[in-house]
Length: 509
Image: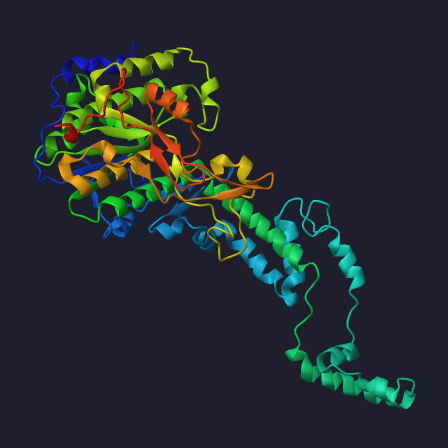
């Protein structure tokens, strides 16, 4: 059986939703890993009040730090984020030391006087790149260019600058008595005009610059698509969208608790019951006069025992606060690893993990828990047709058909919180969850498949009505993408409980 549910005997004492004063605001708590300092224990960590006016200040105060390993024996890459633009490739290329050498070489390659030295440096920097191999952008051009570009004589130089026949051609080079004099004239003219002459562009320049751009692009993609970078960027972009949607009015108060899953798991542990945990004391007892209306997490929960234990504990804390707990659903809950898989073909074999999941669904706390999936678009990929990069030509996802995980997918729980907040702004505590079910104006990305233009699903996968109903029966709150629209809708609001039930919260009272 599911050990984490030993606290169920005490759970019956939870308030399970107090009636709210009609004039009381909606208080929304977002819990997730936003990359800030971990020096203060999570149960004592500051709850940051966030709105449209101070979002940038909160981001700067948390100063999220991204650490990405760069290889054996090398220092990891460290990036401190103090504004949203710091996630952008232009900023990454500008501030990260990993790009310094390549940027310097790129600049030198664009000037004929420094091209040759820069080309040599590039061949030394990039393993396997010699400017003449079949695989290199400059394949076959180094030797041929050297053979086909003759050195320019002083007279030819003079002709090119003045656009006319040189003096010696006018007078005739065969006049031996004039040659010495003519040479002196050539030298004099060359000394006068040389400072104003730009050397010819090397025919290999475009290929070498392209090689540098490819190297920068490859390293940049590694950073942008690293799980740690994607996780933090998705959380912050999801939070920013939520803040802009619901905090324009003082009737919705939004707070952020920056915490990892490991920290929350430790803060919910207790020898006796969940009621004795430090996190419950902080979020429930210490806020008795200002109870939460909704607790949302950016975390994704699957069917592993440790994940379900934490989910049950956080759901119980929300229930004691009289509000629901909404988080993200992992596709492992329905027996697959990706939402893009053919979920309907997955065998419903009751494994030990799934038995724990079903045990949790039968517990009273399940009525206060909702898990949402699939994920939603957090932003469009960078590229010439979507969001151009100024520093150089960059396409974040060259192969959109086979690069699903390279797109930035955000926490769907925050999107649902935005819908609930909007319902409250429209009708106060007389609201119904079903008042707002559609996510509109989501990022829309198109690409071609066999010559036909396709729209990437805004919520990661196209779910049929039948499949959405299947997910709902499994305890998931499904997000259904519209075909040919930049929108998605919630199939229905429900808790994870089995049998299916509505999601408990202040709006039920």
